[in-house]
Length: 292
Image (cartoon, rainbow, N blue to C red; front, side, top):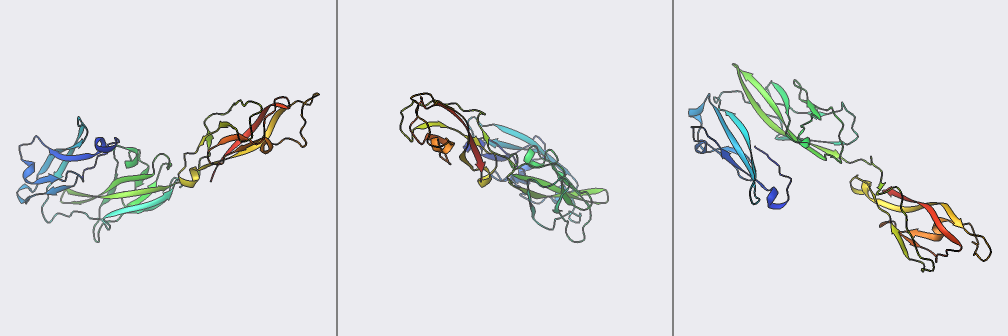
């Protein structure tokens, strides 16, 4: 199977596959590629091609206008029917690990079919999620899959790559591949961060209780409830209270909640009471963002 990705949306990112060859042999007589999936399939017997290597390109095109494409080289070694072609114990393998999994942790193993011996190799792709950077290592002799670099759900949530199995007989190597998927579980490893370190707002005195003052916003890159932010008000840090003659005095010490309220979901801060400049000209307090 030939696979290509296109980050564009809609038809601009829909990929179709076709054969592209400049060889003398007409590949379309013996091979075809499924346009939507990229699976290579035989169309007729290949007995007359035993011992040869078919070399060609597969073209991946998007459905945009104008269409863009890329070519990848492909090689098919046509072996005799008695060749020892390796197989895997499963059609595909899947593992799941939390994003805080320690480097060096073993995920599990891939296995060849009964009675088969050979060696395993991780087939790195061209993108980070296809193990381009070697995040996972496949032990050559045992097929053990290990984590060799830290993973971060916010960067890559699912890794998909291939593992090859190789057998050798009479100086001829036969290779098969299997799809391997590693799902990364999100952990609450990030805290909410406000868009700015300080918010400053002005409100006219005499405005009624419930007047909107300012909206604070914080973002948490974690997924689901780990990244859902709620807001609350912290302590009143300072307030310029004027106790000179004619100024209104507070019947009890001022607190943040006695002057302001915050919507826990939206971060909108509103007044709880009417503002009086002569009584207090400014307030300084903390807004708190927490995840769930």
